[in-house]
Length: 178
Ligand code: HQG
Image (cartoon, rainbow, N blue to C red; front, side):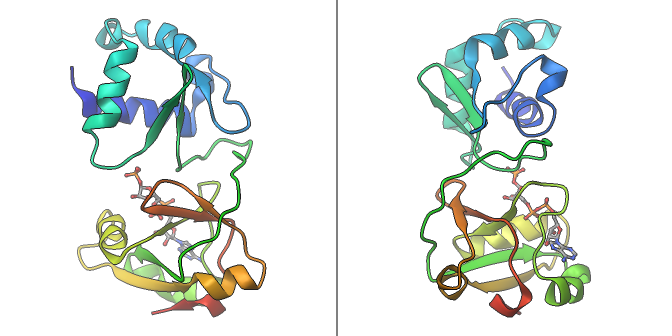
C-alpha cells in the first residue's frame, strides 16, 4: 500500500474537504475511523485500507501530521475548513521560526504573518523545520524569527500543532525579525 499517497488523501479529507467524504469534523477535528474507512472503501484504490494501515501511515511519515486516539483520527494542523478547529493555548518556546519565499517577506514585515488560506499561521520550533517548510516554495527561503515569548506575554495565543509545529491566529510584524 502506498502510505504516502494515503497520507495525502487523508490530509485532503481531514484538513480541507471532509464533506467530499461525507465526514463531519468535530470541533477538535476528530472523525470516527469507522466512518472514514467507509468513505475510503468507496474508492477502488483504498478498498482494502484498514485501521492498522492508518497506524502504519502515521508511523512511516517523517512529519507527524495525523493522530489516532480512541477509535478516532484527526489532522494535527493545516486545516482550511470553514469552521475553525479549536486548539488549546500553550506556552510557546522563547523563539519560533517561519520559513517563507523571499518574495513575500516585505508584505509579511508590513502586515505581520496571516493564516492566508488556512485557519492558523504555522510556525516551526527549529530553523531546520522552517527551512524545509520554506523550501516547498523557494530554493532559498527566508527564515523569519518570531519573538514568541514576548508575543505570548503581550496576549498573543499560541497552540501546539505537533512537536515541531506551533500555530497562532496572527503574528503582528513587531514580533518578527528577518
Ligand atoms: C505566507 C506544510 C504575504 C506564508 C508545511 C506562507 C507547514 C504571507 C503562505 C504547513 C503573509 C501560506 C503550513 C503576508 C503569511 N503577506 N504572504 N502578510 N502572511 N504569508 O502553506 O506556513 O507538509 O498556508 O509565509 O510544512 O507555508 O502539508 O503555510 O508562505 O507545516 O504537512 O503565506 O503546511 O505541512 O502558506 O505551511 P501555507 P506554510 P505539510
